[in-house]
View 1 (cartoon, rainbow, N blue to C red):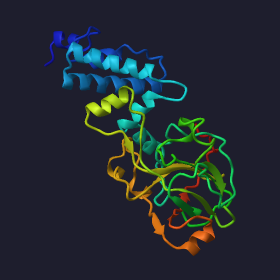
View 2: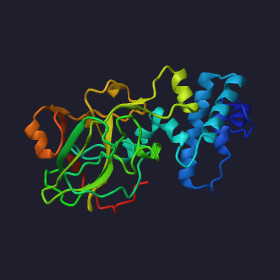
View 3: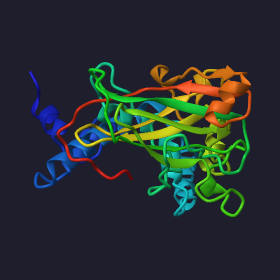
View 4: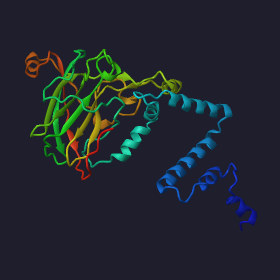
Length: 306
């Protein structure tokens, strides 16, 4: 039978190690937003459980606080170090997966990345988005359909990638042409699209800040697997934010931000045929990629990508 002392102790508002999370969560007002109460209760519970398992020294805890302080100080209008931290811990991909559970067969999502720019130039199908002439020529083509294989005309396909030096255009203002390797295409009446570019290559995420130092301390590299970014949208369908990856990249199984999904690894076929190259307006040899996007129907209004 529980004694009066034990009962009083279990409901005490005063701190003790065994009941630390319970004491903290009990301080929240019943008038606080219900979702905030839920989120904070879970965070406090798991944070306290982690601290009890780790048992950090005072020096270790202040080192963690310094790391978070330096992470915030690294943030600018063009760089969000906290998003980078979320990325390298796999949290960004987990949040994205939870929020984009789709029917079987629909193209899966992956993370947006920090270098998306709205209002990229719109091109006709067949145009070349490589403006600096660097890299191995490539043609990408495919269809946009629903999960039943019905073509979706007038779908918008936004694409962007790094140049052959491993930089996005916004990272090299004044060096790369504006909007290099970036553009918007529209599927035709049969849902088809195609464009010319260059084969993507792997590149490192920014590693000169606290997140990069953390990667190094954990014995991890900062490299992203080679990929092209896509956003595919059409009225009446859920927007797809995704990548397609090259199958021969050495960093495919260890992408720094966990962005690779098996279903997003494409076939890149090298075509050494001068006549085929002439037909698509490229030099030989060139890379050929056929990639179809399958969209899931949605009755929700389309939201702006941010």
